[in-house]
Length: 192
Image (cartoon, rainbow, N blue to C red; front, top):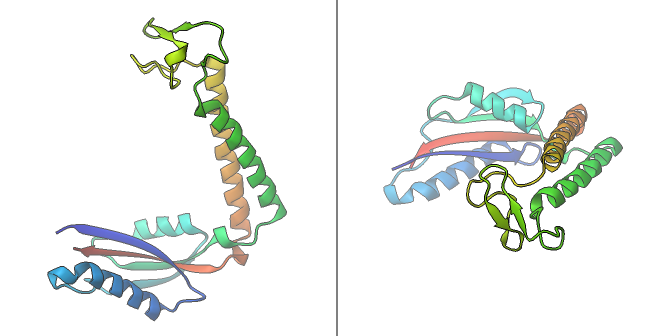
């Protein structure tokens, strides 16, 4: 026997509470048929609050959760809101940043085609490493990052810029949330 927590999202404009509850009960019964059980231990509590977005709904569920609670709350699905010119611009900028990051972080910095030397020295453990055999950016002996400080700083800057753009996109989507469709975030908990 195990403990299972499930979260699901349903479009509130398409599906009624009765349909959602029936769909969840069918899934629960399908999982519990071997043990002869069936159904949720408690009915779903349908909150009337409307959360700003998915993350807000997730926080709401965590704040109102208790053992074997069946909880549902509505939220604006900002992922499906009409994308404004500003959001499209920020997403394009974020995509370009991600591409630069992948190029910097994705492949080994020291390769035979980029370095004249056949060996490099790990600054942490002093090992001499063959450039031809390096497959990653860390020392195979001590795990120290072999890339120059400037490249490591650039990677950190790119991560921070990406996170900042992510927050700007989220803020823009929240601003447009009134145009986003309403969804139900449903959390169920059963003993299987």
